Length: 269
Image (cartoon, rainbow, N blue to C red; front, side, top):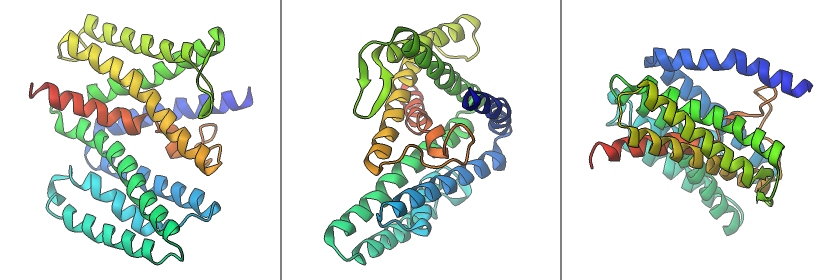
């Protein structure tokens, strides 16, 4: 009960603040993305260090930041150099390890985490700053699906129960909760279509809603795989009642790039 109250209090404070930053966009949003990437890399560093897995925070941060630099117009010519330097650094750090296994694991952790975190948060920038006029509306649509869908999954799993979705990875998730989340996403799409909150076709809105409902869950499970492999419950406790940045934004890191990809491809079909 205490944890639920803490989670609720943090959400009441954090959600309006987050939406305000998305609405303001510009350097407010870029600053948020930099902060989230930095904290995420620190979480990777702390967890890998506790398991004696070689990971360099400075190199990891450089490599991860190369991805969102692609979408920052005044730096887009510098990112290939930035990325090359970071990759060389990751390679040098890897080969400095005392076994080939550690070298390979180090390089894998640096590159995989950079792509996962970098593309995930870069997609928020792309959704907000590149989709002219409707960027903020699509961000709200994304989080309406993720937050309401997550609640629907929790309630569906708690009330209905039934077979587990992925017992080895996430023992608390059920097929009933998964279906409830997708149904909630469809209903959100229908609401948006009914009230015309975004100027888009009904088909596009429903497709995006379903995709977020499914991929959001995949993102959650994807992060759970990392935690199970590393033997930790949460990446950190920086957000009271919610765990770490990666714990709170796990669904975002795959759902945001997916939404961006659908919107981009839809306009070119």
